[in-house]
Image (tube, rainbow, N blue to C red; front, side, top):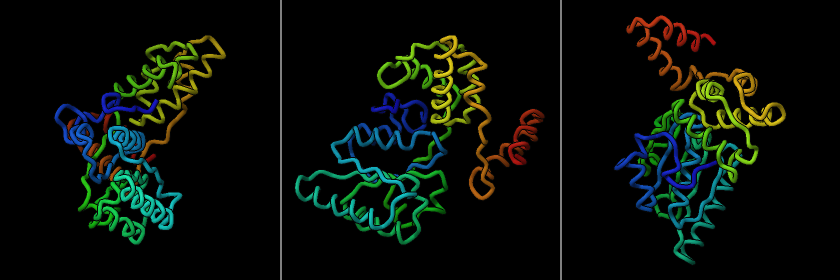
Length: 262
């Protein structure tokens, strides 16, 4: 169900709406190094694939969790040869770029400066602290937001209707309250929502052929809410807690306090 074009991407209207910077960059086909910063399931990998599909560049995905400097140098060398032989550029998608230490990130600098690769880095951590300044100065930063419940509903309905890339072949229906439960409980994470939907669809297929609220609850279970006292979530949650108190909203105040204590 991963989108192939910018029009198929759901959410991130502040970046992909009409005349917005990232949409213009993608549609122009002009490749430049960027860093995508956002929570899990917000579409960072999806956007990297869309950017690659919109250009004629060779797409080279890599994870900083499982790769090292030697792997990076192999990709860079292949990119140099490709550029020299055919003029084709290489788009290096480096997921979890914050997992690279300073020396590992420094290994990318010459290739970015010389145009051997176009870097698309993805991170859930604030790149101002986790990505080297020289690398950031050569990249454009785009901040992604957690998807809204309405966005997740669009994705899930699309998945249920698509027989080729989604769950359409299973021919299951879904109650609106079941989908709403998943959308509200996924915490803005498309991956969580779609995984829960698939699990609920498998249960429904073996039962009544319909995803009801019980199946949705069983599929979603209780998701661990994101909260990192050492990262940006800490300050975001505290800010929401303070705003709830100032706004005299007791329900929201209790909710955000629970997030901090959970």
